[in-house]
Length: 257
Image 1 (cartoon, rainbow, N blue to C red):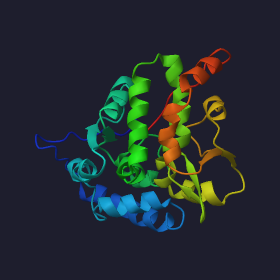
Image 2 (tube, helix red, strand yellow):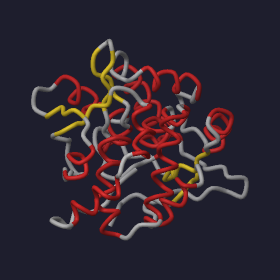
Image 3 (cartoon, rainbow, N blue to C red):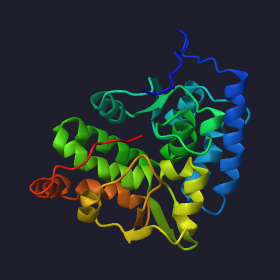
Image 4 (cartoon, helix red, strand yellow):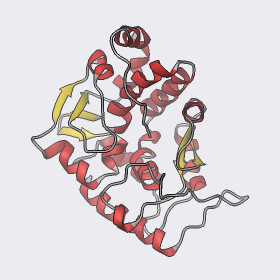
């Protein structure tokens, strides 16, 4: 059982965060803003500027949603800490990104297995100002929503190694676009500078065959050349590849966001 409980928004959608929780946001934001410089992709840095999130308190979902609606037509939906997969896919298909309305404790500043509001707002929402990224997530939600659980377990790897832990090749070197990395101080440094993990060219079949662990730092990352390649995945025979993989493997649990 999680020790975290999402806060309930009031009738106006406002979530009351304590002074301690606002201080934790301030610490996380300042530390992460520093470490992503020259490590995050340009699209993320641009999106962070566009969102113009407060640095000294937890933002409200409507503050983020107002900017996202004006840029890519998306919004943020406050949710409980854990939601059913069907609800998750449905939200994505309808251009709503779920955000669990709790923030980690000081004792968990460096690592949290479950996604909190800092992970969602800082890690993912800046990228949702990019149309190719936003379109891919909507397409992903629409397709995952109508598949069976075995297929979903394989498709989870695609989300994991792109939206959560993806890297880009740029003229300035490798840059990060995955929200799971960008919201983690340790993994932001590790993903680009450690000699330990594998950094592999993105290959659809390889990605869909690669299991992952959500409870530890990653041992492999996949590289795209640009974000347009994300949306172009819709033209690939993804479900055909999934069917071929499932002929020899049951896949692993689907843990995303």
